[in-house]
Length: 516
Image (cartoon, rainbow, N blue to C red; front, side, top):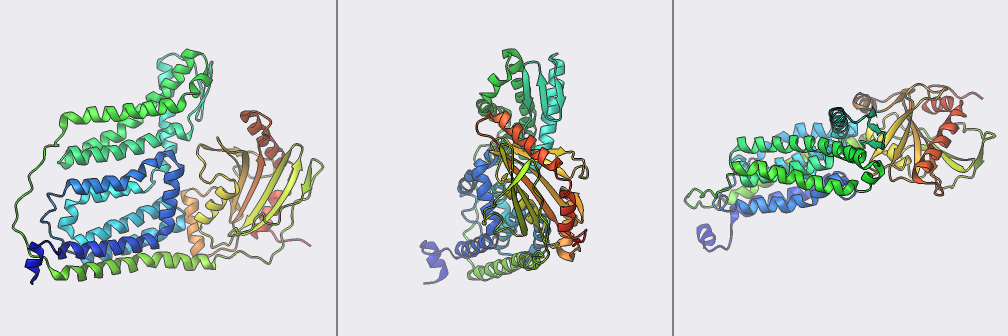
C-alpha cells in the first residue's frame, strides 16, 4: 500500500503528523527549559486579579484554530529549519532580561521561542494562516505591570480636571484625593490595569472573530486600548463624586469592588456596540485546491529545526546559571551588630532566621515598647543579578505577591536622602522599611540601576550590595489604620535612634574597613 492509498483511506496524515510531533516535542522541551518563567506566570495568574483571564487563553486559541478548520483542511506544512537562526537574537534578549531582573522580559522571550518554533515546523505560508490564534498566545504572559504608574497618573489627572468642572473642592497630593467628605486614594488597583488588559484580550478575540481585514482589526484593537483608559477615569471620578453626594467616602469604598465589576461589564458592552456595525463575520468559502500528496521528508526538517532552536534557547540559561554559581558572598568577614539602646532591648533571634538566603544574612530582634522589630542585613556577592536583589527585598519585606504596595521615602538625619523607603501593603499585617546599597551608595534599581548592576554581575565589583530591612507587625488590638500608623512610627523611631546603622552598612559593603 503506497502513501496515496493510506492518505485517501484516512489511515495516516504524514504532513500533519511530522510538524505536530516536532512542535509537541519542542513545546515540552522549551517548557522544561523555561520552567521558572512558566511557574512565575502561573503564580501571577492565581494571585493577581489583573491576570486571572490568562487561564482562558489556551481554550480560546484552540477554538480559534477549530474555527479555521475549513481553511486548513488541505494546507501543507513546509518546515523552514534555517529560521532557527532567529533564536540567536532571542537568546541574547533573554540573557539581557535575566541580568536586568525583568521577569516579564524573560517570559516574553520564552513565548517568542514558542512562536518561532511554530514558524519553523509549519513554514511561512501555513504560519501566516494561523498567525491570529498563534499570536494570541502572547496573552499567556502577565505583561503590563509597568503601566500601573502611568495609568495612576492618567486617572489622577482625569479626576482632578473632572472635579474642577463639577466645582467640587479637592486637594490632591500625589495619588491622594481629599474632599470635604473624606479621602480617596488612586491605588494600584484603581489604576485600571486589570480592566485594560482584560479588555485588550477581549478586543483581540473579538477582532479575530468578527473581522477579516487587518485594518479593521487594528482599529478595533486600538479602540479596546483607549476606551478602558477613558472609562476608568470616569469610574474614579464617579466614585469620588458619589462620595461627595452621599457625604461619606467610606460608604462608597464599601462597594468599591462591585463598582469595578459593573464598570468592566459596561466597558465590554461599549466595545461590542462600537464594533458590531463594522463586522465581517460572514463565512468565507475556502478556496478549492487539489489534494496534495504528503511529503515523507517533512518530519526530518521539522525535527532538525526544533532541535537547533532548543539548543540555541539553552545557551543563555546555561550562561546565566554559570554566572550565578560564581555569585557567592564573602562568608569570612566579620560584621559588627547594632548595640541595644535604652528604648529598644535585644531579644533572642530564632536560629532559623535568615537561613536559605542567597546572601549572607545578619538578623537581630529588638523589643521597642509594645512592638517587636526585626532588623535584617543581607550582604550579596558583587556579581549578584538585579533579580536576586529585588527578589530578596520582596521576600524580606514580606511583600512578595502583595497588591496595592505603597513606597514612601523616609528622611533620616544620619542617612543620605532617598536611602530609606517605608513599604506598606493594604492587606499586609506589618510594615517594613528597606534600604538597598550598591557601590557604597543607596540605590533603587530603576532601569539605569538595573543596567549598572547587570554589568557588575558580569564584570564584578569591589563593593558588595547590601540590603537592610526593618520590619514591625501591626498591633492587632488597634484598628487597621491606627495599627499601621503605630507600626510605621515604631520603625521610623528605631531608625532615627540608630546613627551607627549607616556605618554598619558601609562596613558590610566593603567601603569602610573594620576597626579593631
